[in-house]
Length: 325
Ligand code: BTN
Image (cartoon, rainbow, N blue to C red; front, side, top):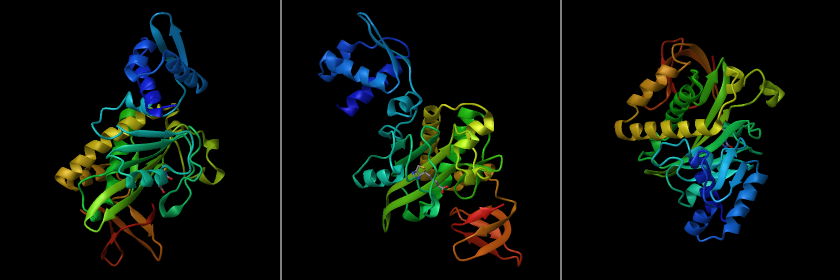
Protein backbone atom coordinates (compact mmCIF):
# COMPACT_ATOMS: atom_id res chain seq x y z
CA UNK A 1 0.00 0.00 0.00
CA UNK A 2 1.32 3.43 -0.95
CA UNK A 3 0.42 5.83 1.90
CA UNK A 4 1.03 8.92 -0.26
CA UNK A 5 -1.44 7.74 -2.89
CA UNK A 6 -3.94 6.72 -0.22
CA UNK A 7 -3.60 10.12 1.43
CA UNK A 8 -4.05 11.87 -1.94
CA UNK A 9 -7.22 9.88 -2.63
CA UNK A 10 -8.63 10.86 0.76
CA UNK A 11 -7.67 14.48 0.13
CA UNK A 12 -9.53 14.43 -3.22
CA UNK A 13 -12.60 12.89 -1.57
CA UNK A 14 -12.60 15.67 1.04
CA UNK A 15 -11.98 18.41 -1.53
CA UNK A 16 -14.79 17.12 -3.76
CA UNK A 17 -17.13 18.15 -0.92
CA UNK A 18 -19.92 15.65 -1.67
CA UNK A 19 -19.31 15.36 -5.42
CA UNK A 20 -18.10 12.07 -7.00
CA UNK A 21 -14.44 11.28 -7.65
CA UNK A 22 -13.92 9.07 -10.70
CA UNK A 23 -12.09 5.85 -9.71
CA UNK A 24 -10.99 5.40 -13.33
CA UNK A 25 -9.51 8.91 -13.62
CA UNK A 26 -7.71 8.59 -10.28
CA UNK A 27 -6.35 5.16 -11.31
CA UNK A 28 -5.09 6.58 -14.66
CA UNK A 29 -3.45 9.58 -13.01
CA UNK A 30 -1.52 7.44 -10.52
CA UNK A 31 -0.85 4.45 -12.79
CA UNK A 32 -3.05 2.11 -10.73
CA UNK A 33 -5.72 -0.43 -11.58
CA UNK A 34 -9.32 0.39 -10.73
CA UNK A 35 -9.24 -2.56 -8.33
CA UNK A 36 -6.35 -0.94 -6.44
CA UNK A 37 -8.43 2.23 -6.02
CA UNK A 38 -11.39 0.13 -4.87
CA UNK A 39 -9.14 -1.54 -2.27
CA UNK A 40 -8.18 1.85 -0.84
CA UNK A 41 -11.87 2.74 -0.63
CA UNK A 42 -12.55 -0.51 1.27
CA UNK A 43 -9.72 0.36 3.68
CA UNK A 44 -11.27 3.78 4.30
CA UNK A 45 -14.59 2.09 5.06
CA UNK A 46 -12.90 -0.20 7.60
CA UNK A 47 -11.39 2.94 9.19
CA UNK A 48 -14.90 4.40 9.63
CA UNK A 49 -15.39 6.52 6.49
CA UNK A 50 -18.82 6.26 4.84
CA UNK A 51 -18.34 6.22 1.07
CA UNK A 52 -20.90 5.46 -1.62
CA UNK A 53 -20.09 4.30 -5.11
CA UNK A 54 -22.31 6.03 -7.70
CA UNK A 55 -22.61 4.11 -10.98
CA UNK A 56 -20.67 5.72 -13.86
CA UNK A 57 -19.69 8.68 -11.68
CA UNK A 58 -17.40 7.49 -8.91
CA UNK A 59 -16.94 7.60 -5.14
CA UNK A 60 -18.60 10.11 -2.84
CA UNK A 61 -17.47 10.74 0.74
CA UNK A 62 -20.58 10.89 2.92
CA UNK A 63 -19.05 11.11 6.38
CA UNK A 64 -15.69 10.70 8.05
CA UNK A 65 -14.63 9.53 11.49
CA UNK A 66 -13.16 12.05 13.92
CA UNK A 67 -9.53 11.71 12.84
CA UNK A 68 -6.80 14.29 12.27
CA UNK A 69 -5.35 12.79 9.08
CA UNK A 70 -3.36 14.98 6.70
CA UNK A 71 -6.30 15.15 4.31
CA UNK A 72 -8.70 16.22 7.06
CA UNK A 73 -6.34 19.02 8.15
CA UNK A 74 -5.35 20.15 4.67
CA UNK A 75 -8.94 20.86 3.62
CA UNK A 76 -8.83 23.83 6.07
CA UNK A 77 -5.20 24.83 5.58
CA UNK A 78 -4.34 28.28 4.17
CA UNK A 79 -0.56 28.18 4.75
CA UNK A 80 2.28 28.17 2.25
CA UNK A 81 4.75 25.98 4.17
CA UNK A 82 3.40 24.81 7.51
CA UNK A 83 1.42 21.58 7.41
CA UNK A 84 2.27 20.84 3.78
CA UNK A 85 3.95 17.60 4.96
CA UNK A 86 1.90 15.70 7.53
CA UNK A 87 2.53 12.32 9.12
CA UNK A 88 -0.38 10.93 11.10
CA UNK A 89 -0.29 8.09 13.64
CA UNK A 90 -3.17 6.23 15.23
CA UNK A 91 -0.89 5.82 18.23
CA UNK A 92 2.79 6.44 19.04
CA UNK A 93 5.01 6.93 22.08
CA UNK A 94 5.57 10.67 21.53
CA UNK A 95 5.24 12.88 18.44
CA UNK A 96 8.13 14.88 19.87
CA UNK A 97 10.57 11.96 19.58
CA UNK A 98 9.44 11.20 16.03
CA UNK A 99 9.76 14.87 15.07
CA UNK A 100 13.36 14.98 16.37
CA UNK A 101 14.15 11.98 14.23
CA UNK A 102 12.46 13.46 11.14
CA UNK A 103 14.23 16.80 11.67
CA UNK A 104 17.61 15.06 11.73
CA UNK A 105 16.66 13.42 8.46
CA UNK A 106 15.99 16.73 6.67
CA UNK A 107 12.21 16.98 7.06
CA UNK A 108 11.17 20.32 5.50
CA UNK A 109 10.19 23.48 7.37
CA UNK A 110 6.64 23.18 8.68
CA UNK A 111 6.47 19.36 8.78
CA UNK A 112 3.72 18.20 11.14
CA UNK A 113 3.65 14.97 13.14
CA UNK A 114 0.27 14.30 14.73
CA UNK A 115 -1.05 11.33 16.65
CA UNK A 116 -4.51 10.32 17.86
CA UNK A 117 -2.94 9.03 21.07
CA UNK A 118 0.47 8.98 22.79
CA UNK A 119 1.60 6.23 25.12
CA UNK A 120 4.62 8.20 26.41
CA UNK A 121 3.73 11.86 25.92
CA UNK A 122 6.23 14.14 27.64
CA UNK A 123 5.91 17.60 29.09
CA UNK A 124 8.40 20.16 30.40
CA UNK A 125 11.12 18.78 32.68
CA UNK A 126 10.33 15.28 31.30
CA UNK A 127 7.04 15.16 33.19
CA UNK A 128 4.48 12.73 31.75
CA UNK A 129 1.81 14.25 29.49
CA UNK A 130 -1.61 12.59 29.47
CA UNK A 131 -2.67 12.06 25.81
CA UNK A 132 -5.96 10.13 25.60
CA UNK A 133 -7.04 8.70 22.21
CA UNK A 134 -9.01 11.09 19.94
CA UNK A 135 -9.68 13.53 22.80
CA UNK A 136 -6.97 16.07 22.19
CA UNK A 137 -4.42 17.45 19.76
CA UNK A 138 -1.04 15.80 20.28
CA UNK A 139 1.31 17.22 17.70
CA UNK A 140 4.84 18.40 16.97
CA UNK A 141 5.77 20.92 14.29
CA UNK A 142 9.28 21.08 12.86
CA UNK A 143 10.18 24.68 12.02
CA UNK A 144 13.40 25.98 10.54
CA UNK A 145 13.28 29.75 11.05
CA UNK A 146 16.11 32.18 10.31
CA UNK A 147 16.96 32.72 13.97
CA UNK A 148 20.00 32.55 16.22
CA UNK A 149 20.02 29.73 18.81
CA UNK A 150 19.56 32.27 21.65
CA UNK A 151 16.31 33.44 20.01
CA UNK A 152 14.82 29.94 20.04
CA UNK A 153 13.20 30.05 23.53
CA UNK A 154 11.01 32.93 22.35
CA UNK A 155 9.39 30.49 19.89
CA UNK A 156 7.44 29.13 22.89
CA UNK A 157 5.88 32.57 23.22
CA UNK A 158 5.29 32.80 19.44
CA UNK A 159 3.51 29.43 19.60
CA UNK A 160 1.47 30.50 22.65
CA UNK A 161 0.16 33.58 20.83
CA UNK A 162 -0.62 31.49 17.72
CA UNK A 163 -2.60 28.98 19.80
CA UNK A 164 -4.63 31.61 21.64
CA UNK A 165 -5.47 33.34 18.33
CA UNK A 166 -6.50 30.00 16.78
CA UNK A 167 -8.74 29.16 19.75
CA UNK A 168 -10.32 32.60 19.40
CA UNK A 169 -10.97 32.09 15.70
CA UNK A 170 -12.27 28.51 15.76
CA UNK A 171 -13.88 28.24 19.21
CA UNK A 172 -14.74 31.86 19.86
CA UNK A 173 -13.42 32.06 23.42
CA UNK A 174 -10.50 33.95 24.85
CA UNK A 175 -7.85 31.87 26.58
CA UNK A 176 -4.96 33.42 28.51
CA UNK A 177 -1.25 32.64 28.60
CA UNK A 178 0.55 31.73 31.80
CA UNK A 179 4.27 32.29 31.26
CA UNK A 180 6.00 30.58 29.63
CA UNK A 181 4.13 27.70 28.10
CA UNK A 182 0.65 27.19 29.53
CA UNK A 183 -2.61 28.20 27.89
CA UNK A 184 -5.33 28.62 30.49
CA UNK A 185 -9.12 28.67 30.62
CA UNK A 186 -11.11 29.30 33.79
CA UNK A 187 -7.91 29.05 35.85
CA UNK A 188 -7.05 25.57 34.53
CA UNK A 189 -4.53 24.40 31.95
CA UNK A 190 -5.93 23.60 28.52
CA UNK A 191 -2.68 23.44 26.54
CA UNK A 192 1.05 22.96 27.10
CA UNK A 193 3.89 23.77 24.75
CA UNK A 194 7.28 22.08 24.69
CA UNK A 195 9.90 23.81 22.54
CA UNK A 196 13.10 21.90 21.80
CA UNK A 197 16.10 22.87 19.73
CA UNK A 198 18.45 21.25 17.26
CA UNK A 199 21.29 23.72 16.63
CA UNK A 200 24.90 24.35 15.72
CA UNK A 201 26.63 26.90 17.99
CA UNK A 202 25.76 29.74 15.61
CA UNK A 203 22.69 28.46 13.75
CA UNK A 204 19.25 27.00 14.42
CA UNK A 205 18.84 23.79 12.48
CA UNK A 206 15.33 23.02 13.66
CA UNK A 207 12.96 23.90 16.45
CA UNK A 208 10.49 21.21 17.45
CA UNK A 209 7.32 22.77 18.83
CA UNK A 210 5.34 20.15 20.72
CA UNK A 211 1.73 21.12 21.41
CA UNK A 212 -0.58 19.17 23.70
CA UNK A 213 -4.17 20.48 23.72
CA UNK A 214 -7.05 19.11 25.73
CA UNK A 215 -10.00 19.36 23.35
CA UNK A 216 -12.97 17.02 23.64
CA UNK A 217 -12.33 15.57 27.10
CA UNK A 218 -15.09 15.23 29.66
CA UNK A 219 -13.84 15.65 33.24
CA UNK A 220 -13.60 11.88 33.72
CA UNK A 221 -11.38 11.45 30.67
CA UNK A 222 -8.58 13.02 32.74
CA UNK A 223 -6.72 11.04 35.40
CA UNK A 224 -8.03 11.92 38.88
CA UNK A 225 -4.92 13.90 39.86
CA UNK A 226 -5.50 16.36 36.97
CA UNK A 227 -9.15 17.15 37.77
CA UNK A 228 -8.38 20.32 39.72
CA UNK A 229 -5.72 21.68 37.35
CA UNK A 230 -6.66 20.64 33.79
CA UNK A 231 -9.59 21.48 31.56
CA UNK A 232 -10.60 20.99 27.91
CA UNK A 233 -12.18 23.24 25.32
CA UNK A 234 -15.31 21.07 25.48
CA UNK A 235 -15.58 21.39 29.27
CA UNK A 236 -15.16 25.17 28.97
CA UNK A 237 -17.64 25.69 26.10
CA UNK A 238 -19.98 22.69 26.08
CA UNK A 239 -19.19 22.29 22.35
CA UNK A 240 -17.56 19.37 20.51
CA UNK A 241 -14.58 20.91 18.68
CA UNK A 242 -13.38 20.07 15.16
CA UNK A 243 -9.75 19.15 15.89
CA UNK A 244 -8.60 19.20 12.24
CA UNK A 245 -9.91 22.75 11.76
CA UNK A 246 -8.19 23.91 14.94
CA UNK A 247 -4.86 22.35 13.88
CA UNK A 248 -5.09 24.14 10.52
CA UNK A 249 -5.77 27.45 12.29
CA UNK A 250 -2.80 26.94 14.66
CA UNK A 251 -0.50 26.22 11.71
CA UNK A 252 -1.80 29.35 9.96
CA UNK A 253 -1.09 31.65 12.92
CA UNK A 254 2.22 29.90 13.65
CA UNK A 255 3.40 30.56 10.10
CA UNK A 256 2.24 34.18 10.30
CA UNK A 257 3.85 34.96 13.67
CA UNK A 258 7.07 33.02 12.99
CA UNK A 259 7.69 35.06 9.86
CA UNK A 260 6.77 38.26 11.77
CA UNK A 261 9.39 37.32 14.38
CA UNK A 262 12.00 36.60 11.68
CA UNK A 263 11.34 39.90 9.89
CA UNK A 264 10.61 42.34 12.72
CA UNK A 265 12.16 40.77 15.81
CA UNK A 266 10.44 40.02 19.10
CA UNK A 267 8.77 43.46 19.60
CA UNK A 268 5.39 42.75 17.89
CA UNK A 269 5.17 39.26 19.44
CA UNK A 270 5.89 40.69 22.87
CA UNK A 271 3.01 43.16 22.47
CA UNK A 272 0.61 40.42 21.38
CA UNK A 273 1.80 38.12 24.16
CA UNK A 274 1.34 40.79 26.85
CA UNK A 275 -2.23 41.33 25.64
CA UNK A 276 -3.05 37.68 26.44
CA UNK A 277 -0.90 37.23 29.55
CA UNK A 278 -2.53 36.39 32.86
CA UNK A 279 0.84 36.72 34.62
CA UNK A 280 1.91 40.35 34.12
CA UNK A 281 0.85 42.72 36.91
CA UNK A 282 0.21 39.91 39.43
CA UNK A 283 2.04 38.88 42.56
CA UNK A 284 3.42 35.43 41.81
CA UNK A 285 5.66 32.69 43.12
CA UNK A 286 8.28 31.31 40.72
CA UNK A 287 9.34 27.77 41.61
CA UNK A 288 12.70 26.91 40.06
CA UNK A 289 14.90 23.85 40.38
CA UNK A 290 17.07 25.30 43.18
CA UNK A 291 15.02 28.14 44.64
CA UNK A 292 11.57 29.68 44.96
CA UNK A 293 11.10 33.44 44.79
CA UNK A 294 8.09 35.73 45.11
CA UNK A 295 7.41 39.12 43.64
CA UNK A 296 5.41 41.25 41.23
CA UNK A 297 5.47 40.00 37.63
CA UNK A 298 6.24 43.07 35.52
CA UNK A 299 6.07 41.49 32.06
CA UNK A 300 8.54 39.91 29.67
CA UNK A 301 11.87 41.27 28.52
CA UNK A 302 12.93 41.62 24.88
CA UNK A 303 14.57 38.20 25.26
CA UNK A 304 11.34 36.59 26.50
CA UNK A 305 12.44 36.33 30.17
CA UNK A 306 9.80 36.91 32.84
CA UNK A 307 10.73 40.03 34.82
CA UNK A 308 9.96 39.84 38.51
CA UNK A 309 10.20 42.75 40.97
CA UNK A 310 11.27 41.30 44.32
CA UNK A 311 10.28 42.77 47.69
CA UNK A 312 13.72 44.40 48.09
CA UNK A 313 13.03 46.36 44.88
CA UNK A 314 15.49 44.44 42.70
CA UNK A 315 14.41 43.02 39.35
CA UNK A 316 15.12 39.42 38.35
CA UNK A 317 14.79 37.97 34.84
CA UNK A 318 13.62 34.35 34.95
CA UNK A 319 14.44 31.84 32.22
CA UNK A 320 12.36 28.91 33.33
CA UNK A 321 10.08 28.22 36.31
CA UNK A 322 6.71 26.92 37.40
CA UNK A 323 4.57 29.92 38.17
CA UNK A 324 2.06 29.89 41.02
CA UNK A 325 -0.41 32.76 40.73
C1 BTN B 1 4.04 21.05 29.13
O1 BTN B 1 3.16 21.85 29.44
O2 BTN B 1 4.73 20.51 30.01
C2 BTN B 1 4.30 20.74 27.68
C3 BTN B 1 3.43 19.62 27.16
C4 BTN B 1 3.70 19.27 25.71
C5 BTN B 1 2.95 18.01 25.28
C6 BTN B 1 3.05 17.77 23.80
S1 BTN B 1 1.86 16.59 23.23
C7 BTN B 1 2.63 16.54 21.67
C8 BTN B 1 4.12 16.55 21.92
N1 BTN B 1 4.59 15.20 22.17
C9 BTN B 1 5.02 15.05 23.42
O3 BTN B 1 5.46 13.98 23.90
N2 BTN B 1 4.92 16.21 24.08
C10 BTN B 1 4.37 17.26 23.27
